[in-house]
Amino acid sequence: MAESLANRTVMLKSGEEAVQLLGKQDRHFSMVEDKFDVHLIPKGHELVIEGPPGEVESLYKMFQELLVHIRKGHLLTSREFEYALKLTAQGDVGSIRSLFSDLVLVTPRGKQIRPKTIGQKQYLEAIRSCDIVLSIGPAGTGKTYLALAMAVDALKSKQVQRLILTRPAVEAGEHLGFLPGDFQEKVDPYLRPIYDGLYDLLGVDVFQRYREKGIIEIAPLAYMRGRTLDDSFVILDEGQNATSEQMKMLLTRLGFGSKAIVTGDVTQVDLPKGRYSGLEEAARILSGIEGIARVYLSEKDVVRHPLVQNIIKAYEKHETMQERDRHEEKNNNR
Image 1: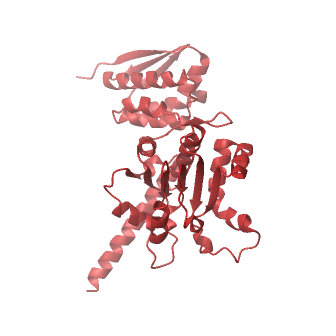
Image 2 (image 1 turned 45 degrees about the horizontal axis):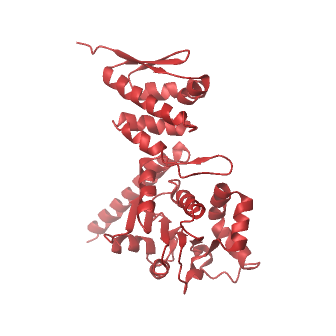
Image 3 (image 1 turned 90 degrees about the vertical axis):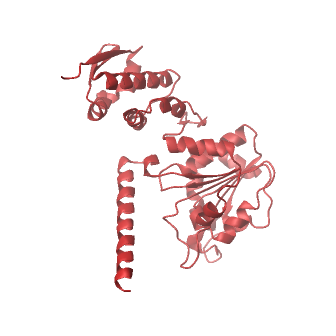
């Protein structure tokens, strides 16, 4: 006997709400109907959901959750709608509220910085609750940008007095003397991703003012030696390219009232052959220490172009097959 159909009606207050909820030119319709066996029927300021009772109820709850955030001023993107739909398909509608209600800060251009995935939400919670966080994951998962956003928020709320941002200048072998220009001109190419993030989060004028006052300091990792970093928010980006000695050096610089975030992708180590990644080592030997968190992000947390997730999966599959082939060849040669 065929399952009886049900329907629920979502009430909209304006055409703007309809555009946000349904997407421009109703592009969200196909997303919903591809994942669920339902029909969406717009009727003026009403949206009727028709289909199997369980799916109808889940989608009704999802739309209601999204409307709560839209009515609070959240500008819903198609990517966020797609992720909310994914959570709903997994039976996790309840996570939508905690995800979209976590506003880190608003940029000078009005951009709202929030976690876009459950993994990113867990990352932010780790930063809030721990003084040292090791964030490991592929490119595009928001590791550095979210750390910068949390650092800017901590600075503005006077939780810290300064931001210290650093990267290993591996491509220059940490020996920058052979490059043309003064010190700043030598290191800027390696620190450009940090500059770009801070320009977005603070605006160029505020960033420059903070730099001049020493409130924000950006330098290669090698220049952190011999310092004690009190009342600071420290971010080490590209931590997979820090050596064991450099990682230990940075983490033991941490002073009172400070927080350190180390980000990196352990599949992209550029250290010379024979040198072990300090991030991989730290993640292993610091496990279980109270106040230190390890956060692992994956392709599910990639917030760049949708194809990036598929590219990461393809490379992971390729690397797994290569490792298997090497293992089989080694066994055959015994």
